[in-house]
Image 1 (cartoon, helix red, strand yellow):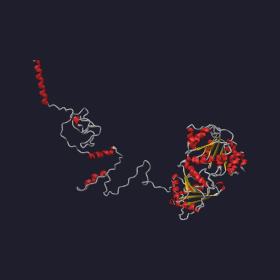
Image 2 (cartoon, rainbow, N blue to C red):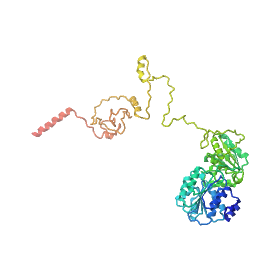
Image 3 (cartoon, one colour):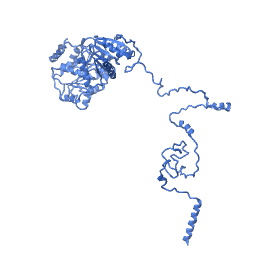
Image 4 (cartoon, one colour):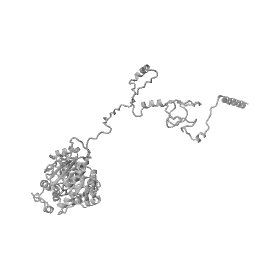
Length: 560
């Protein structure tokens, strides 16, 4: 079968011939006629089988007739990563060069003003990542009510990256009457649920199981210690005829560390991960495609959809957490019928992950030994964290009690004398003991916690002391039985300025120990208040009698 048998126009056939394609792949041969019929398609095929061309070619043929309006694209393609979106845009440029179709690439990390200018002129094909597309829609820069064809590419990758809520929101903004093309490398239960929600009576096209690896890829695995992984990688690169290779790590931080290590040892290497600026990511990928760099250390951002021709090797420096990622990683090599090699560097703690991968692909991965590095066996019972660290970590401080349970106290080992166990037996033991023997009192367990009243009362009794009696005249007391002294804001204080530990009934609440007649200034009243008003003195009985005699004499004089 050739592309001419699929019903494509002469312009597309001419562009395909100039690109060197004459025979369609199985996924293209089955999907293109169904798409040209206008039906929804649910496509599943392993990576590297030409899924991108299976929807770009019929879309160009469908969109050849028509005209785009400003800010209203006629078709929409959603991709999980910027690199995959850019690759789809390149396919449109390559296959549609004889069609007068306009496209726009809306991805993060690039100038939004340039993208808005393209949308204002009107586009036939809009290729976007979910985040940037929603941002443009919320700013009122784009309208989605004229989309006739929707393509969701690498749906399983979108599910892993957490884009499905954004995709569901975008689909809700589109017209109900449309054609939807849903492509994925795997068809798990969650993917099928999404397909049922997005598609209407779809035609399922499954070429090969998404969990199978290409037969053109030779696989091997070395099991070494964590500290020997870099030396193992360098040895494999030197002994293998590596034309160009992807080196995958699980974490972005490890990508940078391994990149600097290989750079230090003289390898021509570049790095690619999600924290890099979009311009730097584009330059890195372009250098690798042109052969200016032989090795590229990358994260899983490069594991899906990237089409780099004639990649000879793939190295898994870290065993992937998800078994499906292994299939996508090694799918970067052995593409288009060419042979490739995939090496995995594992540690004994990766046993469970290797077991899941071998169960998924249905074949064991052959083991190899590296010269100068001890070969180990996999531990199928070990647990490994996401960062690649192995083994069960002991709990800090030993075994922790259950939630709500108090930890048991360890007995003191420095106690020599055994105290009397029963408090009731103290008197009996003291009566029988000689007079010069002191009986040790048993220590009662203090079950109180915090700063409660039960714990504070014994301390108050210990610190309580008798105040020396001062000879002074009794002060007048008010109706509440409280001294007519000033009241402060704090608690009772002793003569040294500290807080008194006496009971509340010994002194009134807030009473201060200061000079007579001074109110509210504590132990140190200002001098101008003490000297301002003379204090009244109490008259004696003799003075009162003299006052009465003077008043009586004054009354007699007035009568005369």
